[in-house]
Length: 227
Ligand code: CO
Image 1 (tube, helix red, strand yellow):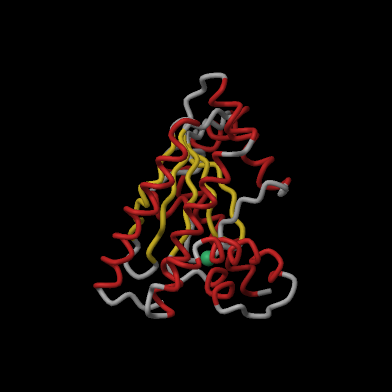
Image 2 (cartoon, protein in one colour; image 1 turned 90 degrees about the horizontal axis):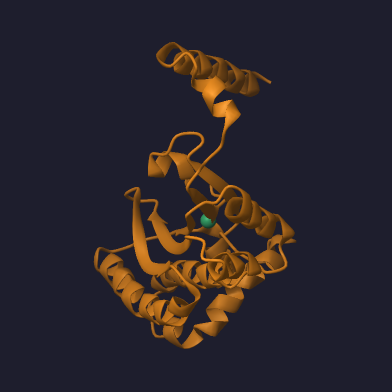
């Protein structure tokens, strides 16, 4: 229990520190939540949404699952999306994957890990969809890197195609969907040029992202990306 005691002690110190700097911080924060961003990211402990984007509590609504997957039948993810768009009125939905993702790697290597294999099947479907492009990449590391990006691009499309986002656009609500990839090695987020601001942009944006982000991978490969 010592480890947990440490967490609770840390929490008390943190809360006291915040209160000493701004006495009404928690009172204000507890009364209203108006984040402009919904973050859909990987559960990976090394990719905390608030910290890597410099956002304070209250500024980003977060949903995380293994390999940042958006499935049309996932009530959990859809509920988060619906609440964020319809109730909180976020202006941006960010799907952020990361290089060196264990889920993507397991999917690529067809590892047998148990129940999660079914979840990761969605990433394998992405791999199958882009089989030709992936097989042209000579190294396993390069293929996994590219699969991390392709997964973000495809999951961004999935977000854009939900009834939640489609309906928001149909009623003229300001809302954009973005695809990013975080690099664990340098802490920097790469914009995969997948930014969709309306239903008519989806097809062209998807085609552009596939081309442009391919250049991102090549640049990373040039720097000797190792996962
Ligand atoms: Co991951």
